Structures are given as C-alpha cells and as structure tokens.
Image 1 (cartoon, rainbow, N blue to C red):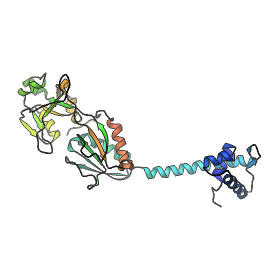
Image 2 (cartoon, rainbow, N blue to C red):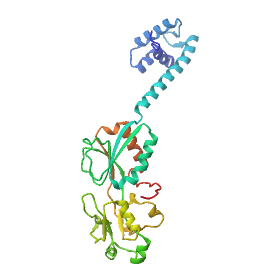
Image 3 (cartoon, helix red, strand yellow):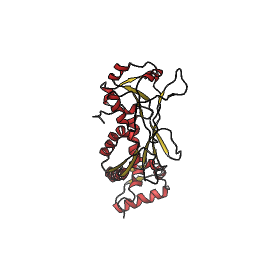
Image 4 (cartoon, helix red, strand yellow):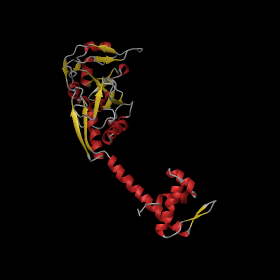
Length: 308
C-alpha cells in the first residue's frame, strides 16, 4: 500500500467531522472518501472513526493518528514548497542591454541583483543603438526615450528632467543666468547623440505649453556623458544633462544647478522584454528590483559614487 493512501481523506474527514464536506474539499465523491478511509483503517488494523447517521467522531487511535499524520503532511508540504521555490529561484544567464548614459545608475543595481541571487550569470551589453532583442538574445533592454516597438512589454522605471549645470568658477566669470534667453553670453557644452548630432537644450515654457528647444551655439561637444560633466566641472562651459546623471560633483558643489525653475521634463526610462519573458524568474527578479529601487514613476535614488 502507498504510504499516504487515505491519509489526506482521513485528515479532511477528521477536521470537518463529515465525509460529505471532506469530499467537497478534495473534489471527489463521498463514496470515494469513505472507501479511502476504510482501506486506511484496514491497513492499520485499527478503527480511526466512529460513524453514525448524524455524526463522525475520532476514536482514541484516530486522535493519535491525526496528530502524527498532520505533522507528516505538513513536513511533506514544506518539502514540496522548498523544492518548488528552488526551481523558481532566479538562476542561469541574464542578458541586459542598456545605453552608456545609464551605466552609472544601473551597474550598482545589477551588482546587487547578482549578490542577491548568486546563481545568476549577468551579461551586460552597453550600446547606444537599439538592440534586436530576439536576434541578440537580450532578456531585458533598458531604454531612454519614446518607445518605437509596441510589440515589447514595457515597464516604466523613471520620469526624468533636464538639469542645467555650471561650475562656480564659470558663474563667477560669466554671471548666473536668470532666464534661458541669457544663455547666449555663456559658453555652452553639448552632448552628441548616437546619430552624431549635437543635442539642443530644452527648457519648460512659461506659463506652460510644449518645451522650448534652444539651439545654442556651443564651444565644445562630446559623445560621452561623464566627459561632459568633467568639462563643465573644469569650467569649460555650461552643460545640460538628465537628472539621473548627477554625481558627487553636484552634491559637493563643484557643479551647481542653474535655471531650475525652467527645468523641462526629460524622456522616460523603460525596461523592455519580449512578451512572455517577463514571467521568467531571472527576468522577473530584475524587473522587481528595478521597480522597487528606482520607484516606478519616480526619480532614481542615486548611490554614493567615487567618480566616473
């Protein structure tokens, strides 16, 4: 006889004091429950239940068997859950694609993910172009800006804003602008996007309406965000970056935000994955960590940095 044959039917009958209610919990017929319990009693050579037309009661042997059986079933259920959880635990390769501009924000969080789940092997691909997720076997792509491929599952991670920065030395030489229109007398630095275009600066209009794009003359441009901040901190000119790029130089005063009242909303940041992949444990673990850590709809909580 199978070790557990009749045990669950007996437990349910003992708890419900009813064969009918036990059958309903198990999704079988009352006759099937009655037969299973009777076979259990025959195998044990002891009567576990006293049956009358009105009630079901436990015999002394039934009471003793019930306590031991409950403990055994609880341990089996715990063992099953432990094994099931282990199978659901994030493990194996996880390939993440992200633009260079997000490296400083994402790397500490990816390191935390791997520390939390040591069986994960992370493959990080830094590239400013849009990855072909299926062809390149990308599990999750983090992208800045409007979404182009509506077939992908998207989860918004961040709202952003544009921040205009200058060094104290620059402001001492050129003054602090009170309005965007005053920027024409300031040397400006621009970021060169992946298409090779120097990005124009953006400001919020007053008293509302679409953002104002300013095509300022610039004295220098660079295609690397950290280098842009390096130049601004060195006093080469003013720059405009997204708020998640701010580092210790903004915190310790080497770079100062100006025109904060005119700061415009920046592009959103999304995590993208192929439909159906969001439920894979390793992908789910990354999305959950980012959603918690970056606060969906919020701004990134920056981590201490030792420089870029």
